[in-house]
Length: 66
Image (cartoon, rainbow, N blue to C red):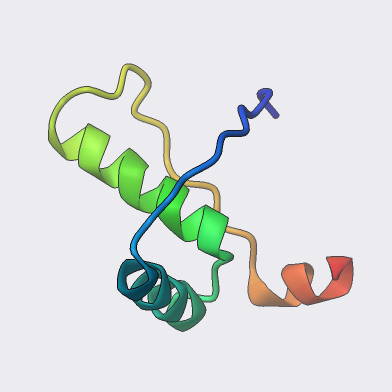
């Protein structure tokens, strides 16, 4: 897997709560949901150089690793 960059993101509390709820509905972490949304927006805008599918980890596999 490619190296990931870490950075601080400040968001409005209401936006944070909405993103967290959406992530929960999609069975993703909040970080994973934000990355997914950013990747989709970049792909739709034609700004993503490599059009690779978003990796999805089945819920059963996530539970085993936790």
